[in-house]
Image (spheres, rainbow, N blue to C red):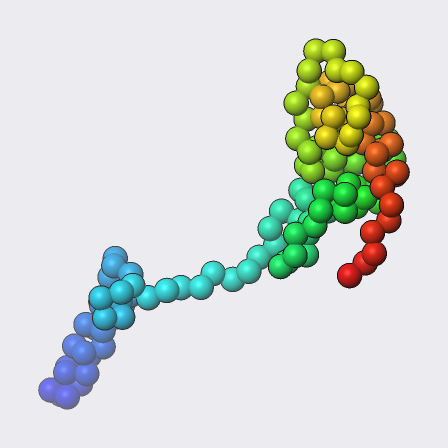
Length: 125
């Protein structure tokens, strides 16, 4: 009977320690817990760079050409690469970075399309 009581007391105290509010410690350092890798906003960035090697702006703009032409999705893809900052009266765009200054979505989309289509195709690595 005493043995059963001793075993129950040990098990009860071990479960009490396991439920402590402090994180588990190894020596004086907290135990590191690794979080699982999950899907991170894949829908928000359709032209995501492969891990380890960042893509150039040209490659990301060309990846936007895979989306349907004239759609809001393609414009959102372009805006993800180069954020829009409209100006009151922008001049004609001299480069793809100047497309962000157009206030109207149709003008901005046409500007990005023109530059993205004129970029020479990059070799796949």
